[in-house]
Image 1 (cartoon, rainbow, N blue to C red):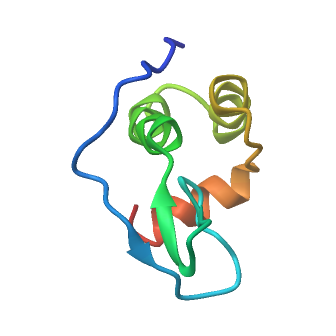
Image 2: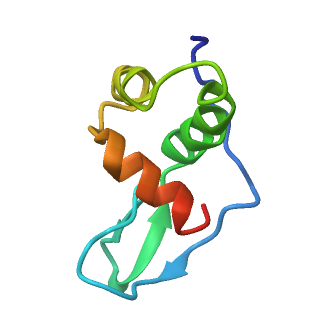
Image 3: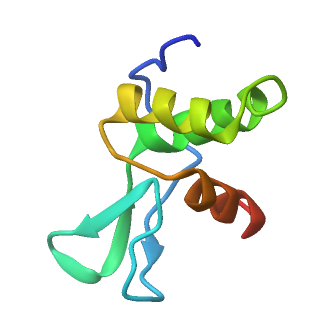
Amino acid sequence: MPAVSETSLSSHQKIKRKARQIPYGYRIDPQNEKSLLPVDIELEALAKAKEFLKVSSYQQVCDWMFKVTGRPISGPGLRKVFKRGY
């Protein structure tokens, strides 16, 4: 699978924290714990993962995402991210 570029996605903005768990592709804002900052490389990897799932298994895509982003995600976790409407 191809590598994810380091370019910034300007369409992703800060979001309000709604729950204890931090969604994949975001991190806590160090200046305001009630806000989440986008992690562009993770959000870009999620966008590409959706395409890769057409030809690969969830586990293969999760392994690729871990290599690219350094943040682990399980097959059921990835399925849940897409089910919730990434």
